[in-house]
Length: 497
Image (cartoon, rainbow, N blue to C red; front, side, top):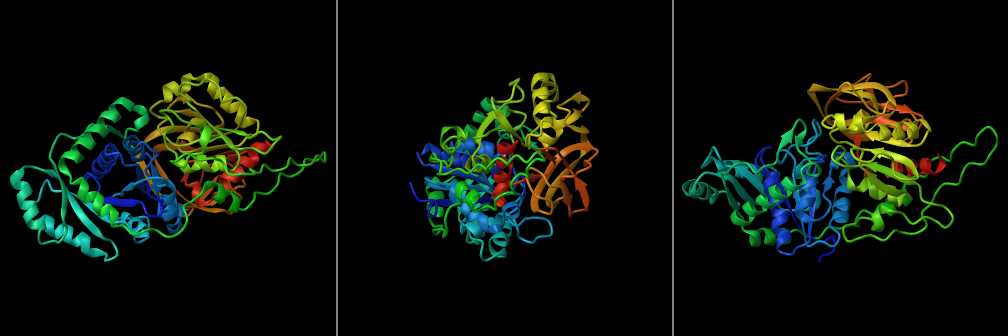
């Protein structure tokens, strides 16, 4: 195995969405893994679903690389963190190769990330409606930015041997080698819904079959040796890998709790005294539990999981553990109580609208969550979590923590956001700027509480989300690696609650 700074790596890109990036990237991860290689899976951008398929293919947690949410300076360190102990890394791009954050030039594009990683790019081209024109297309993408090295092309949806001959003949003049040809076949079964593919957690057996089919197509149609050789051409990266414990240690300490009027001293803040052991994939050993100082038990932070809440970044749990929490996952579809000793609750994104009947039927858990929230304990809810905390969702009773109603909507709300914390909360002080991402086809009415969570700066100015007692609930997805003090502040509040 290689050090994370010198790991072999490839970026799988395309001229546009729908060209076959996910099929090629996921199939390539599985094909490499079947050869006995330790594969590090990555996804450019804020996508939560593709990394689930990547994890299934590679046998390691899928991680996101987002230069908008985390900043360009963290892309390589986060990549190196995910690639610890691996032989090769495969990075699936987003949209078209040069498509980035709207109005921000190349920022957060696949090309931008490829340059930050000094990684060669493999261009996946949908060749179904062209022959000689493919050379002009590939030449344009390969020459557009001289800092982006397009090292090969994989032709997708090729109709026949004759079609392949015409494409190869045309590409001979483009100077970009053909590293694979995938024939036009029935679409691999990866069902989708209103926000994209159905997450792996919801269709595990079918997802395994889909990944196996992708791997078979890639093994049959691609030159794996040539792809490994191209990945080997990536130069070593400089700088250290991101580390959750170090990030927490360097984050500004949150303010101490204010003493109560009776004059009792505030509880001393929790401070993890030593690094936690980590497994090869970077996860903290023993279920992400922390090592607490003697005499002070680590606060239990319950994290919603299961089929209804599948959207999360791996670094969030790692940061909570590094800040001193005992991170325990529970499933709101099945568990009727929160984990024993829960001191704080994190509910991420997902598809609660799909599981509204089941979530509503689990009345004991809804009551337990409401009791925890009304006790003042820290609760952080993003998107799906916001819907779950509302009074009702599509007419079905939810937790009733937030005095608002949620419903499905025909309009898709999608895009990066530049936000400012409006109210002091368990996550941030008022005035804190953070970048986030919205991705939902639901509406919450009202859209903000008396104490709003965020003030959105673009694409239009508005208040959004709810802050009340220890609850912070919002549509905005954020990446805590960009602001590790968020996790530290949250865990501190768990200790003090």
